[in-house]
Length: 486
Image (cartoon, rainbow, N blue to C red):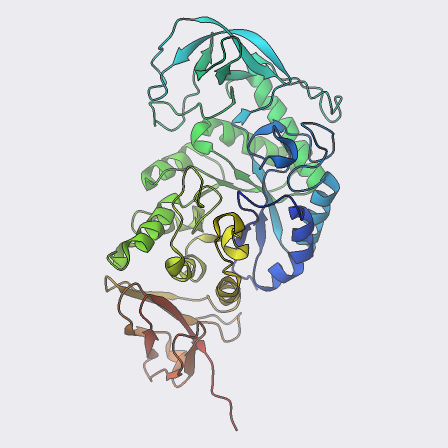
């Protein structure tokens, strides 16, 4: 018997370093498994340029998992190497797969400056040179003195990068491309070429770089026992790199290694093109769906719910879609802030958790709350929906996307999951009832609303249909529940 999968993003941007996340996850593993979590996307576990204060995306040393005194601390923001490995083992003990966050586009916090010939380029037209070739001071020398060559003696220098955003020689911030280098092809076409993002930009055409990153990833999988990868910022990295990288690492480790990429673009055709180009077993986060959910939440009832799944990965490529409501980039205060309004969160999560399409990812900031931004925990609601996915959301699906302010769907259930099957009704306007077919095998059965909006039971008619109610601006989830006999 195969249960539905649920991924959880196990962090939010502003979370405190104490208590250590790795320790918290180890403690919560059993409880998370019971409510239906089957995989965890953990934050970058290696040392960042800001040491224990770094979220992990300011990558300094990929080999330092909280083991060496570098950048002002031994531990990372999330704990020590031992705590990390213990957390992984505990999660896996309870059947939860672990996905590591791979941040390979750049490096930050170099140990020394190198003098490099470079030219300044236009911020919004990356092919337009705006300054003469000159010698700059580039922070590109990574020697990792605190690690003393343990695990790898590879040293990074300017030849392993395409460019940088700071000239130490003239104390100037701009985008500089190194002499003899070209921006990587096969990246997003925003700014004509969106290879450069931040820090020292890694040159993916360099063979030494490819071999070192494969060597590191093979070591990483071996030492941690992780089950897959979340690939950061893939729109800035040639699809050909991850095509070859994933194939080689899977071959060397002899593991399937699930992979999901973050290609931040609301145009589903761009995501589809990337999946064609990568020619590898990989999924993508459904960014277009996130924006649909966000816009619906901001419209206050003026959104046409019949179109909420239009132009999404969930609709066009459901087997490759990792669906989500929000994440660490969309939360308040972040550059991509587009946080789904609180009132719409139950509806949004019902859409990703209770439908057949997509692999849903629950955001830690919604589950635990975001104290920094005064966002309250929605644990009670999410536990309920996740458990419904785990126990009830199976079988044939019937859609009723037939009203601009009230949509619904049903699942007939299957033989492998006792009493499975459900009916979902969502309204962003007036409440009401929707007649929907849930299956002839439920004829005569009673259903109740688990979300507690309707305080009465309904009876399924002889044709397998019911009149399923929803309150104004709410979601109701109806499941079989026979009245207790007295």
